[in-house]
Amino acid sequence: MKVERKDNEILIRFSPGTDTSKIQSIIDYLRYEELTSHSRATEKDVQNLTEKPKKGRWEGTKNELGLDE
Image: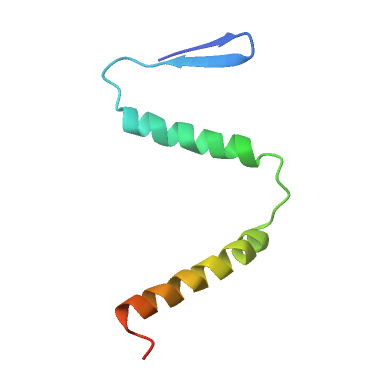
């Protein structure tokens, strides 16, 4: 593995035999960190945002399976 800085970028080079799915997982995590680094959202804020869609999805699933009768 080789790491180098070029202009405003950091280049990381891996040998051809490296498992690319593991590299992609690490890159995805780093991208997440980059995108959320300036966020002031709390865990509670995230829960509030996802609560309604999750409830709607469950209601739809119950209807599809006939569980709400």
